[in-house]
Image (cartoon, rainbow, N blue to C red; front, side, top):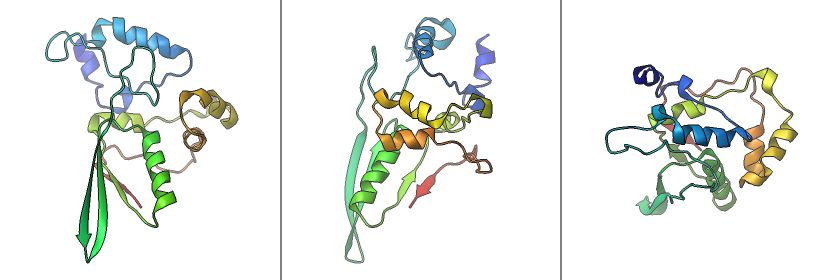
Length: 173
């Protein structure tokens, strides 16, 4: 039975999208389902990791690791910052907003963990769209600022490509 589950690991079909009150049911399922918790190895008995932009009951807060350096190129200082850890999409938006308000030009290079690529592949089906105002209102108390909520709730533009399945690095300027 476990072999059936392994065939979809790290593929777009391994993404699960759950919203609203059903999230508590997902947490209960993950904690109580034998097929979701490893029985051997270093993670034996450890439930799957859930990432959230705000703390939740039973959750653990983990800080990102950041390292800054200065390199002089042609007599001009160039600043570099490396951030390691599970970086949520709203964090990228907040970092770029901070940079936009403080510097004239910048570039960001991102390298995703291959196993997290399905998180970038989710698309809404047209029939399940709620008006954008309702979607944003549902996220008011989740800890995200209004700019990030608007970005998340923006409708998908037909014809825009999804992220490719095999990208290794994305650069924003």
